Length: 408
Image 1 (cartoon, rainbow, N blue to C red):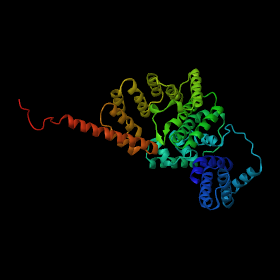
Image 2 (image 1 turned 90 degrees about the horizontal axis):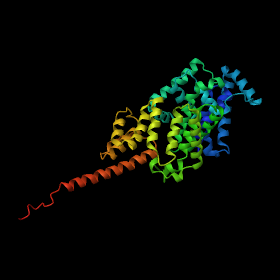
Image 3 (image 1 turned 45 degrees about the vertical axis):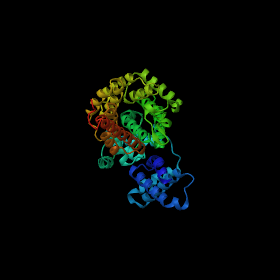
Image 4 (image 1 turned 90 degrees about the vertical axis):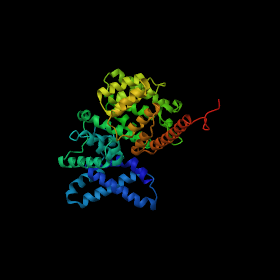
């Protein structure tokens, strides 16, 4: 229970406390203390009726006690005490606590990867290992990146204040990246993250209704989320080509496709809009693979990336065959990415070659249980297939008359 509350409410608690206290480090420390107290008390006293409210209240009280004891914090404590007794006026342009702090953490003085990583750590409810996986870097590298980002904020005294309208576009790219990565972490299991990302996407669309990329991200998330019920069958991952479209959420599909059509009328294409358009094509079976390849060509022109090239190669296999696609895949430097090896294994198998080494490499790198189970199933089937091939080969080369030549 405590772990579930931590996953679901940590980011919101840090957001609320940062607004009240005006100090991110103090807010984060207080929330962590509150969860430590919860781990000690809840198993004995029981879970409170409103766990999230209990965490926020306990964290606020801990922070105020710390400020009261700290000479340097007494002035800040007085300000916090006023906030507790005076009604708060909502004057900020960003109306949502968590989204407000996402914009604040995405300060332009930090490098974009550092902004995204720090915000995911503080607000996305993600562990350092999960963030490292999203960035395709080792966990120690990501841990150092987050520490350096927080250190720079302290050293430069970057204020944690709410950005005004004029500041929002400058930070939008990092904010969209954060929301998308939160969504991706919820894609295969943590539904509360998927739901939260879509909620943030809707708030963003209301906040910045004239930004096509905001709508593109929302459409992308809706279309992917529409397939949640079909994506898992008896706890096992089902690939898109094997899903039953009747199990897709028709309302989410219709909403996502309508947003994609709206984005097309804007004629200001961006990465999220193009990815949404690709998913819109998939959501109208049978998939028009030539259109998917054309959209990936457009996406590569805007954001050249080996990961985009890998996904394009999957579509190329459907239009030009697995041999052409395999050549494109093997030219990519994605050895640390499990999907690279999984796609390569599929193409090898379609060409009649042994995919087991590629599947084993994918299994070594994959971390999500559903993906690992799928890879194990594919590996078992590939092993059985190779054993059958070896048996057939042995039979083909066996002398049909082992006793010698027939008499003539």
